[in-house]
Length: 89
Image 1 (tube, one colour):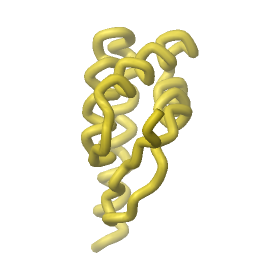
Image 2 (tube, one colour):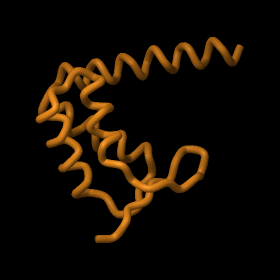
Image 3 (tube, helix red, strand yellow):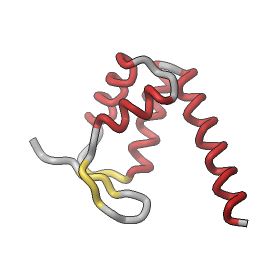
């Protein structure tokens, strides 16, 4: 099997870790089963991909399987962005 790589926002390249998708989905409130299914579907789409694209694919699949967890993830992102912008001022 080919080892997948992820290009991070800062340009660094790291090994793809499917467990990170599972943990992110579970943190958003998805069950382990749903999180694993999302990770499997996202993994099917991957060769070498931007981390933002992984996030996009993950949220798309999570929305289909667990809309509440998807909503929770998006709300978390909004809170984080607000916090980041308040620190930059």
